[in-house]
Length: 569
Image (tube, rainbow, N blue to C red):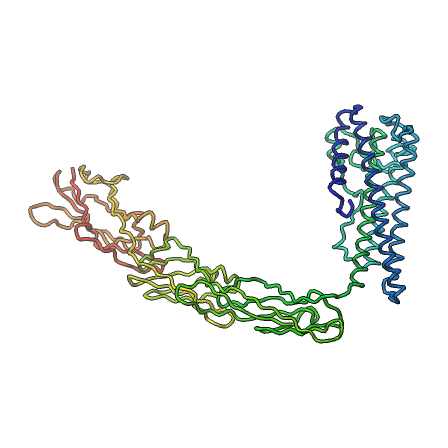
């Protein structure tokens, strides 16, 4: 509503008004009316105190301007006219609100002690606010005191904003002065026209004038007017504070000079730049400082400040994670007597060895000849992180989308991943990450007979539907699915028909087939001449693993592991 700098006590009083207004909708009791009377007194007292405080502020500003004018300084002469104008406009608004208060006191009957005799009076009170014809005029706003009050308050807020922008040069976005009464439905308890219709309420329930004064006791409206007087004084205070700050900015005298620094960060990563902003705490147009120091100096803010930059060293002793780097800065500025005065400071910043953060499916180990996807980040470098990778006994493939993501394909038993960063035109070594290289876990060979895994003991029918399946290790497949694919070169069906070696009775190709889905072995009539109890074998010639590059890598199975035996019935 106003500037927002009400005291806690005044904010509490405003909240009490909202609570009591809500209680009115439930029960107009004597206790509530007395509470409104007490609230009105508190609001009136606060408004008087605020007005007195504003008057003291205004008189202090005027006295300061008069003192400057007597000393021959007329730069702030306009400030005196402005504070007088603000006070006059504020008093004009407050006086009109007081006229409304006098009218309501006459309607309700004012006792000698200042209290209202007929606190619950509503009809004459409503007629005053809505005027002749009631709420039907002006779309629920009426033609009485309510619409005039709305125009008065919003007009004052609009005037205050225009005055602050046009006369005092305040930016619109920096102002906290808002209209007292919004055009939209934003006041407590307000509902939209559509909501009112749906709830079978009066069509003007979303209009401020109707909503605020319909069926309200006169004592509640008197409290509301006191509250608005307080809000007006709050805006008055806002404008006076702007004027006071303007006056202080013009007449400020420098009595001390202090060199101050503002580092962007006291901790920087190796290879990064340490930056600190240097400025003099108080200065004037006649005293522009000359800066110097341990690093490169670049002046800013019209010469009143400077940016000092120095390269943080990247070398660390063994076992050292951070170190302190000292630096100095100076500023030469003329003092009140026109003499050059040198200001000096000594400080330091911390260089911290960047930490390499590794994220992968397996942090400690890499899988042999597999596409191990790793995220390598150095959070301390932030956006300046421009990684350069190297690896022993391994191929490193960079991602085209994410500079932190790489694929490491190891070909030896150990792998050392070197992490560097090309920062500020220099390649700075950050760390080495050591890995063990392990072979992928061996897959399982399964015989599926008529849709079920063969138990290894029960006889099978001569014409059973048989499938040889290669089942990858579940954890390995979850981590590297593109490297957990398998293929069988071919499968031979053998029958032990005599005491000699088993004879091949069929051959089945597995090339191009996903062995996890299975390679079918059609028994057909190949065993029709074999009596029950004949031993048969499924001989896998070679099992290959396909890696993420579709390269074939032979799986080393023992000869006996490639034979699956069964008995026919």
